[in-house]
Length: 118
Image (cartoon, rainbow, N blue to C red):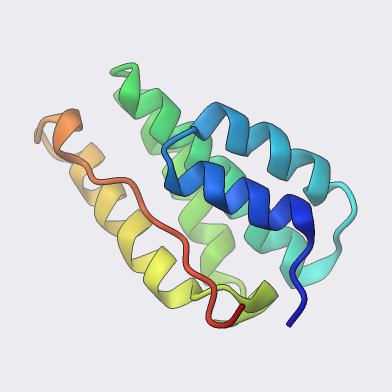
């Protein structure tokens, strides 16, 4: 599968915890998509902003965005855009559970996004 350069860049930024930059990169790409691909990229954008909020101690904002990110990721098939959606979904669900608890926000490991094939 040949991945779009903005998708690759946005995922790399996400995985390096450059969440604001990832959001910006992926939003540009999101505007070109339709269907499940658009749903998945929207989820990743929302997760990036949620992790940005977590880094700033904003539990309420992080929770709201993680709920949306989970909902969008659950709506697509594993392998959409070549991404390991099931692994990504598992980690954002774990992050949501931690945000909804009294656990310290700094203990939340951000999701990492993996391509099934490159």
